[in-house]
Image 1: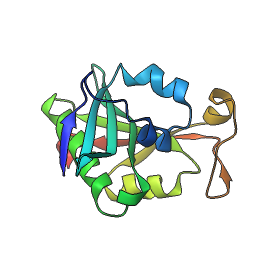
Image 2: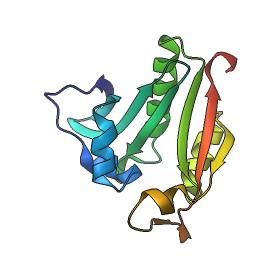
Image 3: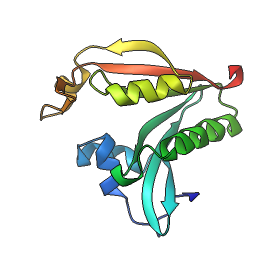
Image 4: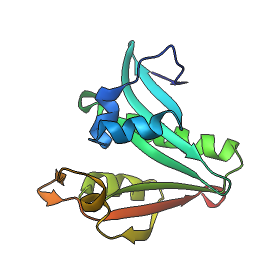
Length: 152
């Protein structure tokens, strides 16, 4: 397994990206404005993380692992890579946003030390044309989680 930065020579891994964000237009909007890292196992792009860097923090815009590679610590490796990368950029904070319906993601981030800091009501119902359901729950609100890099 290796993690490498995406270059224009690489394919855009839509199969992976669309697992975390089902709107391809939205993915296209942020993909080229992000630092993108690919998790590769046996020549297969099995995971991806897109990070945007601002003056005061970095933010994970998309992080996903193909289903066949889930529950094998690949997501943890990508998340740790994102934390380390943000730290190397001298960022003190790493943000990630997810839906109220993303039960597994919320648990995943909290186990890694992220804390919920904000709820943006009706984000998904206002910004996505089609309803998104996960775990039988309508994605309505966006949950913002924060990781303080220097404190962990």
